[in-house]
Image (cartoon, rainbow, N blue to C red; front, side):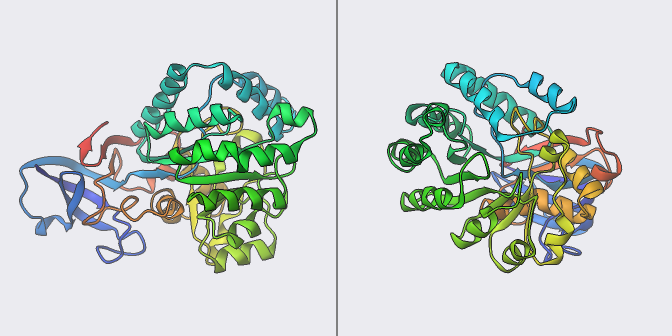
Amino acid sequence: MSTLIRNIRSLVTNDPSLGEGPLGIVEDAAVVVDGERVAWAGPAAEAPAADSVHDAEHRAVIPGFVDSHSHLLYAGDRTAEFNARMSGRAYTAGGIRTTVAATREASDEELGRNLARHLREGLRQGTTTQETKSGYGLTADQEARALRIAASHTDEVTYLGAHIVAPEYAEADDAAGYVELVTGAMLDACAPYARWVDVFCEKGAFDGDQARAILTAGAAKGLIPRVHANQLSYGPGVQLAVEVGAASADHCTHLTDADVDALGQGETVATLLPGCEFSTRAVYPDARRLLDAGATVALSTDTNPGSSYTSSMPFCIAIAVREMGMTPDEALWSATAGGARALRRDDVGRIAPGAYADLALLDAPSHVHFAYRPGVPLVSGVWRRGEQVA
C-alpha cells in the first residue's frame, strides 16, 4: 500500500542530490511512502501515482528526529534536587545514586511503563528513532533487566554499567572491583541485549584508564563504543573516544584545541546535549567551534531524571541556535542526520528512496520555525516506518 504525501511547502530530505543545499530542500514537494520505506521524494509536479493521498496543506515536512542519547530506564523522581540546584546548589554526578536506589526497587512493569511513556512523549514531538541506556541498576542482574526491557521497545540499546561506581563499591573504596564487575560478569549478562557500550569518563565517575578497559572489554563482546566525554570538566574522554573509534563522544562541553582537532579529523561524532546545560545552568558547548573544525555534530536530548528532564528535540534545536552558534539548518541536520551518524545508521535521518519512512509534518512553512517560534508545539503529524502514529 503506497501513500502520496502532496502539497508540501518545504521538504527537508537531508540528501543534497534531491534538493538544495546540505538539507536537500525541495520546495513545492511530494513524498511517496510504500510500506515501511520512502519510494520517491522530489518536486510535486513529478510525483508518481500512489494508492492513497495525504494532503500536507502547504506545510513543511522533515525527517523524524534521531535522538541518539537518552536515559529512559529508571524509576523515581528528582524534583527536589532540581529545585535545590535552581536555588544555588551545583550539579555533580552524585545525584545518580538517588535514581539507582529507586530503580532497584521498581518492578519490571513500572520500568516498562515509564519507558513507554517517554517514547510516546518523544514520538508526539517528532522523534522516530530513540537510543536509550541502562545505568541506574549497577548490578549484573539489574543492568541486564534494564537492557532486556529496553530491547523490547527500541533497537538502539546501550550498556552503561559504567555510569558511576555502584554505591556498595564506592562505600568500600573499591572502584577497581567495580570495573572488574562491569568488564566481567555484568558485561556477560548485558551484552546479548545491547548494541553499544558506554562509559561516563569524568571526575567522580571513571578515569581514562578505567574507561579504556571498559570500552575495550565491551568491544571484545561485539558492542560498539560511545563515551560520556568532557561534560563537567576537561579530561581524557574525547581523546579516548577518538582513539578507540567510538561512534560518538557525548556532551563535549569542555574541550581543548587538541580535542576539537581530534573530533574534526576523526570519524567520532560530537553529540551535544543542550538540555543538560539548560537544566544545570552550566556553560553550553560551542557547536560553532566544532563545526568550523570539520567535526560532525549531533543534537540529542539526554532525557534523564536528574540533569536533563526533557524529551523535546525541538527545544534542543532552539537552544542550539540561540546559545551554541548553530544556524537553523545546521541544528535541524544535527537533530536528524547527525543523530543517525552517531548511531551509524543510513536508513533514518533522511527522506530519500530506500530510507525508512520516518517523517514529521510541521504546523509551519519551514523548519526554521523551531528556532523562530521556540516552545510552540509545531509537530502536527508523525509517520514511523510508513505508519502515521501521531
